Image (cartoon, rainbow, N blue to C red):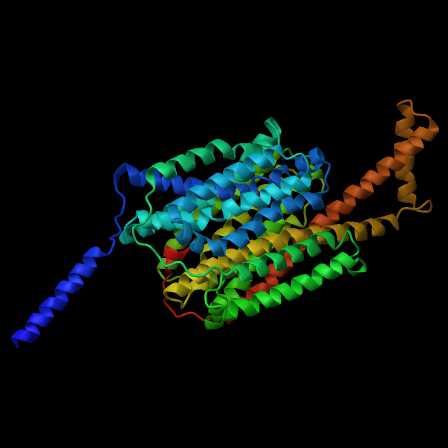
Amino acid sequence: MAPERCSSDKMKTEISTASATLPVHTYETGIRKVIITVTVIIAAMLELIDTTIVNVAINHISGNLGASIEDVSWVVTSYAIANVIVIPLSGFLGNLLGRRTYFIGSILLFTFASLLCGIADNIWMLVLFRFIQGIGGGALLPTSQAILYETFKPEERGAATGLFSMGLVLGPTIGPLLGGYLVDYFSWEWCFFVNIPVGLLAAWSAYTFIREPKVKHDVVKIDWAGIGLLALGIGSLQFILERGQSKDWFETSSITWFTIIAIVSLALFVWWELHFEHPAVDLSVLARSKTLAIAALLTFVVGYGLYGSLFVFPVFVQRLLGFTAVLTGLVLFPSALLTGVISLPLGIALQKGVSAKLLMSFGMAAFALFCWELGQQTLQSGAANFFWVLLLRGIALGFIFIPVTMLAVSGLHGRDVGQATGLNNMVRQLGGSFGIAITNTYVSQRVQEHRTELLTHLSPFDPAAVIRLDAVQQAAQSRGFSPVEAQQAAMKALEGTVTTQSYHLAYMDAFMLIAILFVLCIPLLLLIKTDKGEKADLSSVH
C-alpha cells in the first residue's frame, strides 16, 4: 500500500504543479473596470452610430457629389458588406494578433477611414473608404463584448449584458439625430469627422487600461478560401441588385456574368464551409438545429425590413415632404428610444420563461403594421403624422431583437451557441444589404410604372389635365410671363407634379412590400419547437 500511496501523492503533486503553471484569468475591479466598460461600449456605439448616421445625409451626399440615390445607396451597403465579411473573422484575428492589439487596431482603422470618408471628393472614393471603415467597425461589436465579459466575473455578466445592450440601443438611436444636426448646421462630411476625436480617445483608453487576456486560445488555420468566396459571391450579388435595373438586367453582358459568378461563388462557399475543418462560417450548425435555420431566415427578413425601411424613410420625408435632416433625426429618435426602454423588461420576461415565439410573433405583426401605415402616408403628411406610427416601430423592434436571438440559440450548447450568435449577426447584416439594394431596385421599377400610368391620364382630351394646365399658365402670365413662357412653365410644373407623384407612390409601394413580407414570414414561427418553460440565456445575446 505504501508504494501506491507514494505514487498517488506524486501524481497529485504533478497535477498541482501543472495547474500552478497555467495562467489564471484575473477580473478587473475599481475605476479600471469602469473605464474599460465605458471604452468598449463607446467603441461598439461608434460602429452602430455609423450604420444609421449616414441615412439622414443621403440626400445631401447625392446633391453634393452629383450622384444618384442608387449610387449613394452603396455608401450604406458597402459598410454593411464589410461588416458581414469581418464578423466571422473577428474571433480568429483576435486570437492571432491578440485581442487587445486587434481591438486597438480596429478602432484606429475605423477612425482613419472616417477621415478618408470625410475628404472623399467623389461617390466611388467614398464607397471605397466606407468599405474600409466597415472592416474596422465590423470587429468592434464582437471584440467589445468579448473584452467586457473578460472584465466582469461570471456572476456579474448579466449586468454586463444589460450595460452592453444599452449601448446597442443608444447607437442607432443617436445616429439619425446626430447626423441630422451635423448635416443641417455643418455639412455631411462631419458625419465622418465626428468619429475622429472619439475614436482616438477610445484607442488611447484601450491602450492604457485594457490588458491582453492571460488565457490564450489556439489559433486555427484561417479559411481564406471561404472568406474569398463569400466576399466574391456577396459582392457580385450586390452589383446585380444595384445595377440590374439601370442596365436592363440580362440584356447586359456584365449583369449576366456577375450573376454566374454570384451563383457559382455562393454554391462553392456553402460546399467548402461544410467540408473545411475550420470554416469561417460554420454552416453545419444549421443542420444540427432546425430552430436556428428558421431563426436565421427570420433574422434575414428583419434585417431586410429594418435597413430597407430606414433607408427609404429619410429620402421620402426629405425629398418629398421637405423635412430637414435634423427634423428627420428628431422624428426617428423617440422610436429608437422606446426600443431601448422596453428591451430590459422584455429580457426579464424571457428569462422568466415567457414564450419567445409569442413575443416575436407580436413584434413581426407590429412591424408589418408600421410599414403598412407608412405606406398610407400622403404628400401632406407632417412630423405629427409619423409620431405614433414610428412609436409602433419602436415597440416592434423591441419585441423582435432579443426573442429572435434567443430562438437562434435555443437547444444549443457550448461552442454551437457562439457559432449561432455569430451566424445570426452575419445574416442580419446580409439582410440589411439585400434590403437596401432590392428596395432601391423596386422603387426604380415602380417609379417608371407609376409614371407611365399617370401619363396615360394626361392628354388634351382629359378635362382635369386641361383645367390644371390652363390655371398654371394663367398664373404665370399674371406674373409677366409671355404666352410661350407661361406654357413652358405650365408643362414644367406638370412634369414636376408627375415626377413627385410617381416617387411618392413608389415609396409607398416599398413600405407595403416590406409589410407583406413580414406577414408572410410569421407562420414560420409555428415551425419552431421549444421546450415549455425554457428560460433564455441572455449572456450570448449581442
